[in-house]
Structure formats: structure tokens, C-alpha cells
Length: 303
Image (tube, rainbow, N blue to C red; front, top):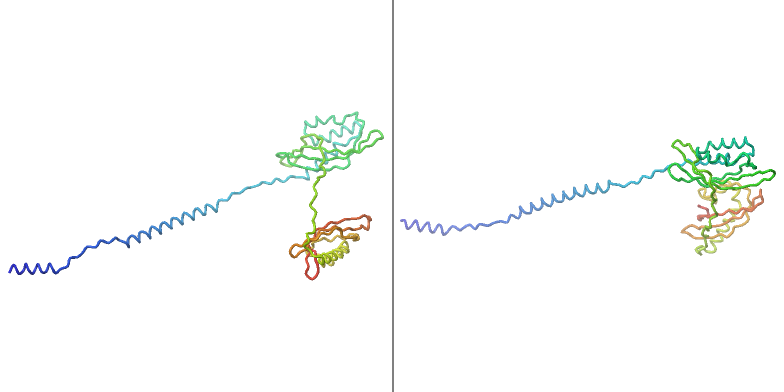
């Protein structure tokens, strides 16, 4: 009986299959972890870029230039009044004393003492001032300005008269409330000389055909014939948007001199000298123009 149960148990054990243990690698868990890392990394990178972008766009360099307004009128008027008083005297004691008193209103105490004897009591000449020209007013340093001026003097000695034109430079100080004082005595200077600059003259570049040249020439001759006395209504027929002003002068058209034509897209550029005769003075007057013309129904001066 025991052998039967042992045999039965043995058969049972043999018929039960053995379970094989499978070790999983946890792929799902790894993918989820990877996605979380990617999400957090992207979020952190986005926040970083956002802050750095704000920093880059909100930081601006600004250069502030302070402009100081120079009171040219006050400086020029002060200078002209000084020049008139400084270069005017009579060869009389009272006149010379009055001059000393007048120029003291412009000069520092040091310069008053220096200029006391510029015109002495026994001077044989008298002087009157004609034209005064201010050539330049330029800043030297804080609140100090250099003024270059010319003065025409009529010098009288006995019965002899002589016209003298001289140029000088002075320095003025202007305080915070606008008051002025001369801090450098009139110093010999030079007038500006004529520049040797010559502007480049326009030349025809062959872009305008002969028929158009003739059309534009006829138009300009017609226009400039009546232009000096043209009314606003007449001018509007030839000139667009007041490209040329109303002049209303008694000039008689004579001729066009050396017109130069150039084509620029839909426009014709013209450089021309117009010769007029002034009916009042009988003198010749040369007006020089640089014009732009366009054609719709008829030619018009547009600028």
C-alpha cells in the first residue's frame, strides 16, 4: 500500500511542469523615467533661455548728449556796442574821458587799466565808426567765447580823412544769468579768405534724346518768359506743389544759357542759367536753377 502511494506521488510530481522564472528588464519604467528627465530638462532650458532673452533685450546703452544753447544775439549785440564805443573818440579831453568811462562797462578791471592809455589826451586824431561785421562766435571753453569782428573807421587828422578797416579778436565770458564781460583785449586778427572750392558742373550724359531735349527747351523758354510776373493760377499750370516761388518782379526774359539734361527714371533733370534784363535797373540778372520735370499731359516742374 505504501508503495502504491509513493508511486502515485511520484507520478503526480512528474506530471506538474516546473515554472521558469523570467527576470524582466523594466523597460516601461526606464522609458517613463527618460521622458520625465527629458521634460524637466526641456522646462529648465526654456526657463533659462527666457531669462537670458529678457536680459539681452532690456539692457540698452544710451548716450545722452547735452546741447547748450549759445545766446548769439546777446554776444553779437554786446560786441557791436563795445566796438562802437572803443573806436570812437574826438581829440578833446572830455571826449577821451567819456570813452574811458564807456569802455569800462565792457571790460574786466585788469583790462580797464590796460586800455586807459590806448587813446591819450594829446592824441592828434579823431575816429568815428562805420560798418561793424561779426565774422564768427565760437566757444573756447566753459562760458567763454571768441568773437572775430571787423570795424570800419574814419580817421580824421587836421583836414585829412582816411578810411581804415581792421579785424580783431576778443574773448568774452558769459555768466549763468547771461551777463557778459570782455576778458581779452582786442587782438589783431585776419579776415576769412576766399576759398578755392569749385563745385562740379553737371554734364549731359546722353540719356535724353534730341526730341525730348527740344520739347523741354521749348517748355522752359515759354515758362521763364512769363515766370517773373506769373500769378499763382498761371504758375500752377506749369509748377507742381509750389516747387518754385512766386516772384512778381519786372524782369524780361532773354535766353537760356548752357542747359544740361539728364534722364532719371521718369524725370528729366535740368541744370540751367536763365538770363533776364531788370527793367528797373537795366542790369542783367542771371538766375541759376536745378529742376526736375515730369510729363503727364504736359511738362511740369516738380522740384
